[in-house]
Amino acid sequence: MRLQQCRYGQMALAAPLVSCGKGWYVLAVRQTHCAGQKRGSMSADLPEYYFRVRENGAVVFRIDTENRQRRIEMDQIAVINIRNGEVKPHGDRALTAADTAEIEAWMEARHATLAARDIDDIFRAIDHMNLTTQWAQSRASDDQLEAVTDTLLMAMHDLRTVLVRKKADRLTGRD
Image (cartoon, rainbow, N blue to C red; front, top):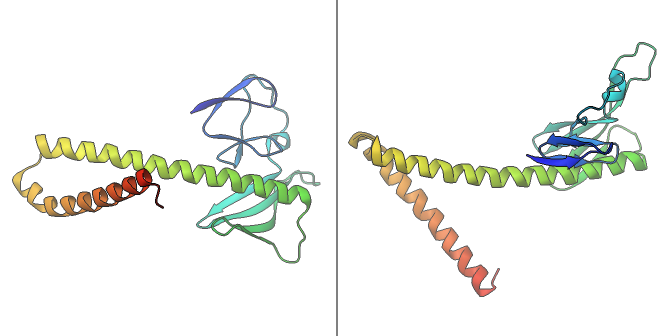
């Protein structure tokens, strides 16, 4: 988690905090509020856009609370494919410049979030390897070790081979 200055000049605690034009968003979806900031009506607290994350991207909705019933209406405006960067407007809708800017900002933030998750997964794997080492040394029975030793050794050998080759490539300047 990191401290980030919000647009009202006060400090807010969030992880990761991303600016997407219309305000600050946590994980590019929820709007955060600064400590001590007075909240207005519910419609004032809502972002203008909502991104429903799916496997390869998101479905983009424009939020509308300016209606007679004061209900929250979510109007689908586009579908995003995060892998290839494709943005498809919903139906025969044309995206405005504001729509496009918000979608591009969300895609940039989403790429950063996914990259951070990848690194976090690797650090968790390192923790699990350390816990596995401790388990094998202190608590594992002979039968348990027999069940996992060959598989663990092959996986560790494969990982070591790839890491050594990649490090050698980096040191020699090859890609």
